[in-house]
Length: 350
Ligand SMILES: Cc1ncc(C[n+]2csc(CCOP(=O)(O)OP(=O)(O)O)c2C)c(N)n1
Ligand SMILES: [Mg+2]
Image (cartoon, rainbow, N blue to C red; front, side):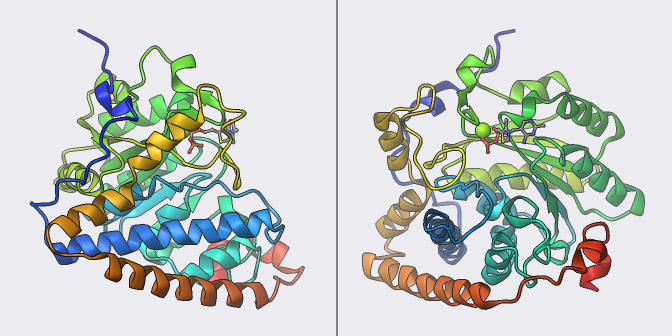
């Protein structure tokens, strides 16, 4: 059998055209566009603030990858159990977390998602279905399997969701998680955001194939490979796999091919340090913009306009400014919170 491969999805000169939207309701698509724009602008705010030295810890930004979290979240409900990792701002915002609570967390403030105890890489918003992100690569993957299995044992049709990167797939625990999920029939969706890089190393130097879905194939888990910069493609594929899991048929695996416009961490583009990462490649990926391609498709269908786009960007800009300014003036956690919350975050929020 030939080794699975991503085909022309890896060619950054392709897929620049407007996405195919005829199957979806325009109002739904406008909501998806607004969400992607909100995530983009929020992360650009974080990039700028980090550059200005206003944020103490590192921030891993996913600018350019917004369609994945937005498309997947459109298939989820707040009783599902979602887990992320070091690059998870989009995951929480797509589930509906407040901008202010995210910003406050990144700043280490008492009002943050993890009450200022975690920063950018330790997010938590269980009321909206987000059970946590941690910087240990692949650390939350088995937790998502456990959470999905718990739903099954509880007799509810909620699902676990594990966002992970192409680098994370190389951790042994991911193979164990895939195997366990399949053998126990755990309702869990593995979502690989394949942006080709693990820190600065390209997948071509790490793996014999660029397709991580071959691990799903090896574990007999149904999978889909999609253009991760096409929110409709992500949504449709995720919906099918989530429905499969909710119906008690076991796990699914979605490989979404994408690219991060910024470097591994913080605001720089890292075109000078990345192996195989050139300015030409970056420019081509910028042209495969998930936001621009949906906006263009809606415009072609007469459902969007440049004036409307500008208005939404302005509205979101105001929302972001308000949330940021509030987070900046919020209080720090009190020192005793260290003993109270770090090992009992749930209790702290009750
Ligand atoms: C167990 C572990 N090993 C190494 C690291 C250092 N590290 C942080 S992020 C990262 C790359 C992860 O790549 P990927 O999973 O593809 O996610 P991406 O950064 O591309 O979103 C590495 C190696 C870590 N945090 N944890
Ligand atoms: Mg990666």
